[in-house]
Length: 138
Image (cartoon, rainbow, N blue to C red; front, side, top):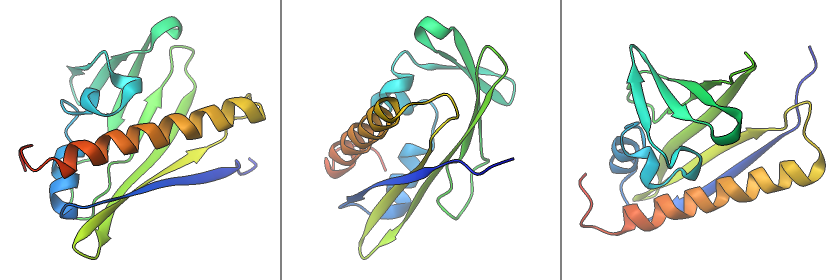
C-alpha cells in the first residue's frame, strides 16, 4: 500500500490542554465544534453513529480516554471504506495545540483536499473560540 499525502492542520488555544482534551474528546460535545458531526452522534455499543448527510450514516470509533491527548477516531463509511483520523491535543506553554492530520484519500482531487483542510481549520477555530470562553465546563 502506498502512503497518502498528508497535511497537519493545527490551532493554538489559550486554555490548559487538559481542559481542551476533556471537552473535545467527549463525543457528545463534538457537534458543538466539529461541523461534520453537527447533526450529533448516537451511541451504538462501543461505537457512535453519525448522519453522514447524502452518503448516509457513518460509524465512528474513538480511541479510549487517555492521558496523552489522543482523540484519534476511525470513520467507517456506508460503502465499507475506512478513514483513519488522527486528532491530538498537546501542551503548548500554558495553553494547548490541537492538531488534526488530514490524509488525502485516493479519490480526492486537489480542490477537495483543500476544501477538507479549510473545513478542519474552521472546526479548530470554533473549538478555540468555545474553549477560550471561560464559562464552558472544564
